[in-house]
Length: 296
Ligand code: PXG
Image (cartoon, rainbow, N blue to C red; front, side):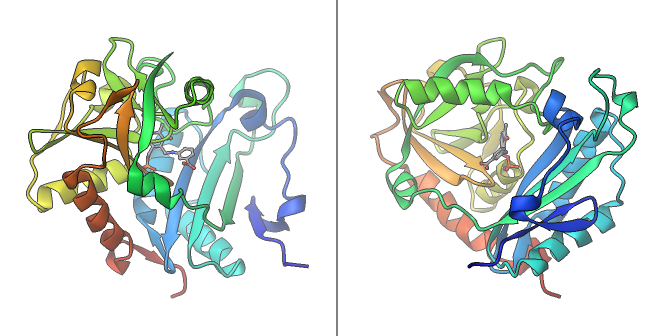
Protein backbone atom coordinates (compact mmCIF):
# COMPACT_ATOMS: atom_id res chain seq x y z
CA UNK A 1 0.00 0.00 0.00
CA UNK A 2 1.15 3.50 -0.75
CA UNK A 3 2.42 5.45 2.24
CA UNK A 4 -0.15 7.92 3.54
CA UNK A 5 0.59 11.63 3.50
CA UNK A 6 1.40 13.12 6.88
CA UNK A 7 -0.57 16.09 8.15
CA UNK A 8 0.70 18.56 10.72
CA UNK A 9 -1.73 19.37 13.53
CA UNK A 10 -0.48 21.47 16.45
CA UNK A 11 3.12 20.32 16.15
CA UNK A 12 2.41 16.61 15.64
CA UNK A 13 2.18 14.55 12.46
CA UNK A 14 -0.73 12.24 11.66
CA UNK A 15 -1.37 9.98 8.66
CA UNK A 16 -4.06 11.56 6.45
CA UNK A 17 -6.76 9.06 7.52
CA UNK A 18 -6.19 9.90 11.18
CA UNK A 19 -5.70 13.66 10.86
CA UNK A 20 -8.77 15.00 12.66
CA UNK A 21 -9.93 17.98 14.68
CA UNK A 22 -12.58 18.24 17.37
CA UNK A 23 -16.22 18.80 16.46
CA UNK A 24 -16.04 21.61 19.04
CA UNK A 25 -13.42 23.44 16.98
CA UNK A 26 -14.80 26.88 16.11
CA UNK A 27 -13.24 26.56 12.67
CA UNK A 28 -15.89 23.92 12.00
CA UNK A 29 -18.72 25.35 14.10
CA UNK A 30 -18.44 28.96 12.88
CA UNK A 31 -15.85 29.16 10.11
CA UNK A 32 -13.82 31.07 12.67
CA UNK A 33 -10.27 30.99 11.40
CA UNK A 34 -7.93 31.93 8.57
CA UNK A 35 -6.12 30.03 5.85
CA UNK A 36 -3.69 30.13 2.95
CA UNK A 37 -3.37 28.07 -0.23
CA UNK A 38 0.27 27.91 -1.35
CA UNK A 39 2.17 26.06 -4.07
CA UNK A 40 5.59 24.56 -4.36
CA UNK A 41 7.23 24.22 -7.77
CA UNK A 42 10.30 22.08 -8.24
CA UNK A 43 11.25 22.06 -4.51
CA UNK A 44 10.73 25.79 -3.98
CA UNK A 45 7.71 27.15 -2.11
CA UNK A 46 6.54 30.03 -4.28
CA UNK A 47 6.11 33.32 -2.38
CA UNK A 48 6.02 31.50 0.97
CA UNK A 49 6.98 34.59 2.94
CA UNK A 50 4.22 36.62 1.29
CA UNK A 51 1.63 33.92 2.11
CA UNK A 52 2.78 33.76 5.72
CA UNK A 53 2.60 37.56 5.98
CA UNK A 54 -0.95 37.51 4.64
CA UNK A 55 -1.94 34.72 7.05
CA UNK A 56 -0.74 36.76 10.02
CA UNK A 57 -2.44 39.89 8.66
CA UNK A 58 -5.72 38.01 8.32
CA UNK A 59 -5.31 36.62 11.85
CA UNK A 60 -4.66 40.10 13.21
CA UNK A 61 -7.93 41.42 11.81
CA UNK A 62 -9.95 38.66 13.50
CA UNK A 63 -7.86 38.98 16.69
CA UNK A 64 -6.53 35.44 16.46
CA UNK A 65 -3.15 34.98 18.10
CA UNK A 66 -1.23 32.39 16.07
CA UNK A 67 0.82 30.35 18.58
CA UNK A 68 3.91 30.25 16.34
CA UNK A 69 6.21 33.00 15.14
CA UNK A 70 6.33 33.54 11.37
CA UNK A 71 9.77 31.88 11.31
CA UNK A 72 8.45 28.85 13.20
CA UNK A 73 5.50 28.64 10.82
CA UNK A 74 7.80 28.69 7.78
CA UNK A 75 9.90 25.93 9.36
CA UNK A 76 6.79 23.85 10.08
CA UNK A 77 5.59 24.19 6.46
CA UNK A 78 8.99 23.15 5.10
CA UNK A 79 9.24 20.25 7.55
CA UNK A 80 5.80 18.96 6.55
CA UNK A 81 6.82 19.04 2.89
CA UNK A 82 10.09 17.27 3.73
CA UNK A 83 8.32 14.53 5.71
CA UNK A 84 6.14 13.88 2.68
CA UNK A 85 9.04 14.01 0.28
CA UNK A 86 7.26 16.53 -1.92
CA UNK A 87 8.75 18.75 -4.62
CA UNK A 88 5.64 20.00 -6.41
CA UNK A 89 2.80 20.46 -3.97
CA UNK A 90 -0.30 22.27 -2.90
CA UNK A 91 -0.07 23.48 0.67
CA UNK A 92 -3.10 24.35 2.77
CA UNK A 93 -2.30 26.23 5.93
CA UNK A 94 -5.23 26.61 8.34
CA UNK A 95 -5.39 28.29 11.73
CA UNK A 96 -8.73 28.04 13.52
CA UNK A 97 -9.91 29.68 16.72
CA UNK A 98 -9.58 26.23 18.28
CA UNK A 99 -11.75 24.15 20.57
CA UNK A 100 -14.41 26.04 22.51
CA UNK A 101 -17.94 25.47 23.69
CA UNK A 102 -21.19 25.64 21.71
CA UNK A 103 -21.46 29.41 22.02
CA UNK A 104 -19.64 31.53 19.50
CA UNK A 105 -17.67 33.61 22.02
CA UNK A 106 -14.02 33.26 20.95
CA UNK A 107 -12.89 33.84 24.54
CA UNK A 108 -13.96 30.25 25.19
CA UNK A 109 -11.27 29.00 22.82
CA UNK A 110 -7.95 29.07 24.68
CA UNK A 111 -5.78 27.51 21.98
CA UNK A 112 -5.88 28.00 18.19
CA UNK A 113 -5.57 24.89 16.04
CA UNK A 114 -2.76 24.95 13.46
CA UNK A 115 -3.08 22.59 10.50
CA UNK A 116 -0.65 22.13 7.61
CA UNK A 117 -1.75 19.91 4.75
CA UNK A 118 0.72 19.28 1.94
CA UNK A 119 -0.64 17.28 -0.93
CA UNK A 120 0.15 16.52 -4.50
CA UNK A 121 -1.07 19.21 -6.81
CA UNK A 122 -4.20 18.69 -8.84
CA UNK A 123 -3.50 20.58 -12.02
CA UNK A 124 -6.10 22.58 -13.88
CA UNK A 125 -6.81 20.90 -17.18
CA UNK A 126 -4.46 21.88 -19.96
CA UNK A 127 -7.56 22.50 -22.01
CA UNK A 128 -8.77 25.30 -19.70
CA UNK A 129 -5.40 27.01 -20.05
CA UNK A 130 -5.23 26.54 -23.79
CA UNK A 131 -8.78 27.27 -24.80
CA UNK A 132 -9.90 29.44 -21.90
CA UNK A 133 -13.00 29.10 -19.78
CA UNK A 134 -16.57 30.35 -19.74
CA UNK A 135 -17.48 32.51 -16.78
CA UNK A 136 -20.64 34.21 -15.60
CA UNK A 137 -21.46 37.12 -13.36
CA UNK A 138 -23.65 35.66 -10.62
CA UNK A 139 -26.26 37.22 -8.33
CA UNK A 140 -24.13 36.55 -5.24
CA UNK A 141 -22.54 39.84 -4.16
CA UNK A 142 -19.01 39.78 -2.76
CA UNK A 143 -19.17 40.37 0.99
CA UNK A 144 -18.45 44.09 1.42
CA UNK A 145 -15.38 45.55 3.10
CA UNK A 146 -17.47 46.53 6.13
CA UNK A 147 -18.59 42.89 6.51
CA UNK A 148 -16.70 39.60 6.06
CA UNK A 149 -14.69 41.04 3.16
CA UNK A 150 -12.40 38.67 1.29
CA UNK A 151 -9.59 41.10 2.02
CA UNK A 152 -9.30 38.77 5.01
CA UNK A 153 -8.68 35.19 3.95
CA UNK A 154 -11.03 33.66 6.50
CA UNK A 155 -12.64 30.23 6.67
CA UNK A 156 -15.98 31.83 5.77
CA UNK A 157 -16.28 30.76 2.14
CA UNK A 158 -20.04 30.39 1.88
CA UNK A 159 -20.14 33.54 -0.22
CA UNK A 160 -17.77 31.93 -2.72
CA UNK A 161 -19.52 28.54 -2.56
CA UNK A 162 -22.86 30.20 -3.40
CA UNK A 163 -21.25 31.87 -6.38
CA UNK A 164 -19.78 28.57 -7.52
CA UNK A 165 -23.15 26.82 -7.21
CA UNK A 166 -24.72 29.42 -9.51
CA UNK A 167 -22.01 28.88 -12.12
CA UNK A 168 -22.38 25.10 -11.78
CA UNK A 169 -26.14 25.05 -12.31
CA UNK A 170 -25.79 27.34 -15.30
CA UNK A 171 -23.22 24.98 -16.81
CA UNK A 172 -20.48 27.59 -16.62
CA UNK A 173 -16.86 26.95 -15.61
CA UNK A 174 -16.43 29.80 -13.13
CA UNK A 175 -18.35 32.53 -11.34
CA UNK A 176 -17.62 36.25 -11.19
CA UNK A 177 -18.89 38.26 -8.22
CA UNK A 178 -19.95 41.90 -8.12
CA UNK A 179 -19.59 44.19 -5.13
CA UNK A 180 -22.63 45.83 -3.60
CA UNK A 181 -22.34 48.76 -6.04
CA UNK A 182 -22.51 46.44 -9.01
CA UNK A 183 -18.82 46.69 -9.86
CA UNK A 184 -16.80 43.61 -10.74
CA UNK A 185 -14.92 42.26 -7.72
CA UNK A 186 -13.32 38.87 -8.42
CA UNK A 187 -13.95 35.19 -9.02
CA UNK A 188 -14.84 32.84 -6.16
CA UNK A 189 -11.21 31.83 -5.55
CA UNK A 190 -9.42 33.93 -8.15
CA UNK A 191 -8.76 37.56 -8.86
CA UNK A 192 -9.93 38.97 -12.16
CA UNK A 193 -8.16 41.07 -14.80
CA UNK A 194 -9.22 42.60 -18.08
CA UNK A 195 -7.11 43.96 -20.91
CA UNK A 196 -8.42 47.07 -22.64
CA UNK A 197 -6.44 48.92 -25.33
CA UNK A 198 -3.22 47.26 -24.21
CA UNK A 199 -3.79 48.21 -20.55
CA UNK A 200 -3.96 45.52 -17.86
CA UNK A 201 -6.72 46.38 -15.40
CA UNK A 202 -7.87 44.77 -12.14
CA UNK A 203 -10.50 45.92 -9.60
CA UNK A 204 -9.34 47.50 -6.35
CA UNK A 205 -9.59 45.45 -3.16
CA UNK A 206 -12.17 47.96 -1.91
CA UNK A 207 -14.62 45.80 -3.89
CA UNK A 208 -14.03 43.12 -1.24
CA UNK A 209 -11.58 41.19 -3.44
CA UNK A 210 -8.67 39.33 -1.90
CA UNK A 211 -5.27 40.99 -2.02
CA UNK A 212 -4.12 38.13 -4.21
CA UNK A 213 -0.49 37.12 -4.28
CA UNK A 214 -0.76 35.95 -7.89
CA UNK A 215 -2.54 39.25 -8.66
CA UNK A 216 0.44 41.14 -7.32
CA UNK A 217 2.92 39.01 -9.29
CA UNK A 218 0.89 39.51 -12.48
CA UNK A 219 0.62 43.28 -12.00
CA UNK A 220 4.38 43.60 -11.47
CA UNK A 221 5.15 41.27 -14.38
CA UNK A 222 2.84 43.14 -16.74
CA UNK A 223 4.56 46.42 -15.86
CA UNK A 224 7.97 44.84 -16.29
CA UNK A 225 7.24 43.62 -19.79
CA UNK A 226 5.87 47.00 -20.76
CA UNK A 227 2.10 47.02 -20.19
CA UNK A 228 0.52 49.80 -18.20
CA UNK A 229 -1.20 48.22 -15.23
CA UNK A 230 -3.97 49.87 -13.26
CA UNK A 231 -6.20 49.11 -10.33
CA UNK A 232 -9.53 50.59 -11.27
CA UNK A 233 -13.25 50.02 -11.03
CA UNK A 234 -14.58 47.64 -13.70
CA UNK A 235 -18.26 47.59 -14.63
CA UNK A 236 -20.02 44.61 -16.23
CA UNK A 237 -20.00 46.63 -19.47
CA UNK A 238 -16.21 47.00 -19.24
CA UNK A 239 -15.94 43.25 -18.82
CA UNK A 240 -18.36 42.43 -21.67
CA UNK A 241 -16.42 44.71 -24.02
CA UNK A 242 -12.86 43.91 -22.85
CA UNK A 243 -10.28 42.81 -25.41
CA UNK A 244 -9.11 40.07 -23.05
CA UNK A 245 -9.93 38.77 -19.57
CA UNK A 246 -8.33 36.27 -17.22
CA UNK A 247 -8.37 34.90 -13.68
CA UNK A 248 -5.35 34.66 -11.39
CA UNK A 249 -4.83 32.53 -8.29
CA UNK A 250 -2.47 30.13 -6.60
CA UNK A 251 -4.31 27.06 -7.83
CA UNK A 252 -5.58 28.58 -11.08
CA UNK A 253 -2.30 30.37 -11.92
CA UNK A 254 -3.47 32.37 -14.97
CA UNK A 255 -6.58 31.15 -16.77
CA UNK A 256 -7.97 32.95 -19.82
CA UNK A 257 -11.67 33.84 -19.83
CA UNK A 258 -13.19 33.57 -23.29
CA UNK A 259 -16.87 34.10 -22.50
CA UNK A 260 -18.81 36.09 -19.89
CA UNK A 261 -22.59 35.54 -19.58
CA UNK A 262 -22.60 34.19 -23.15
CA UNK A 263 -20.81 37.27 -24.54
CA UNK A 264 -17.62 36.34 -26.30
CA UNK A 265 -14.52 38.00 -24.84
CA UNK A 266 -12.46 39.54 -27.62
CA UNK A 267 -12.43 37.00 -30.44
CA UNK A 268 -13.33 34.12 -28.12
CA UNK A 269 -9.74 32.89 -27.83
CA UNK A 270 -7.12 33.55 -25.13
CA UNK A 271 -5.69 36.96 -25.99
CA UNK A 272 -2.05 37.77 -26.82
CA UNK A 273 -1.31 39.71 -23.63
CA UNK A 274 -2.88 36.98 -21.51
CA UNK A 275 -0.75 34.35 -23.27
CA UNK A 276 2.39 36.44 -22.85
CA UNK A 277 1.69 36.82 -19.13
CA UNK A 278 1.10 33.06 -18.83
CA UNK A 279 4.51 32.41 -20.37
CA UNK A 280 6.23 34.88 -18.06
CA UNK A 281 4.40 33.45 -15.07
CA UNK A 282 5.65 29.94 -15.88
CA UNK A 283 9.21 31.23 -15.68
CA UNK A 284 8.69 33.23 -12.49
CA UNK A 285 7.19 30.35 -10.46
CA UNK A 286 10.25 28.25 -11.31
CA UNK A 287 12.72 30.94 -10.32
CA UNK A 288 14.28 29.87 -6.99
CA UNK A 289 14.65 33.53 -6.00
CA UNK A 290 10.86 33.87 -5.89
CA UNK A 291 10.40 31.47 -3.00
CA UNK A 292 11.94 29.41 -0.22
CA UNK A 293 13.60 26.04 -0.97
CA UNK A 294 12.13 22.98 0.77
CA UNK A 295 15.42 21.13 1.00
CA UNK A 296 18.19 23.41 2.24
N1 PXG B 1 -9.71 35.61 -4.35
C1 PXG B 1 -10.14 34.73 -3.43
C2 PXG B 1 -11.44 34.95 -2.77
C3 PXG B 1 -9.36 33.60 -3.11
O1 PXG B 1 -9.79 32.75 -2.20
C4 PXG B 1 -7.71 34.35 -4.73
C5 PXG B 1 -8.52 35.45 -4.97
C6 PXG B 1 -6.36 34.27 -5.39
O2 PXG B 1 -5.36 34.63 -4.46
P1 PXG B 1 -3.86 34.12 -4.52
O3 PXG B 1 -3.19 34.78 -3.38
O4 PXG B 1 -3.91 32.63 -4.41
O5 PXG B 1 -3.31 34.56 -5.82
C7 PXG B 1 -8.13 33.39 -3.79
C8 PXG B 1 -7.30 32.16 -3.58
C9 PXG B 1 -7.98 26.82 -4.61
C10 PXG B 1 -8.36 27.81 -3.62
O6 PXG B 1 -7.63 25.71 -4.20
C11 PXG B 1 -7.82 29.08 -3.64
C12 PXG B 1 -8.22 30.00 -2.71
C13 PXG B 1 -9.17 29.61 -1.82
C14 PXG B 1 -9.69 28.35 -1.81
C15 PXG B 1 -9.27 27.43 -2.70
O7 PXG B 1 -8.08 27.15 -5.79
N2 PXG B 1 -7.77 31.29 -2.60
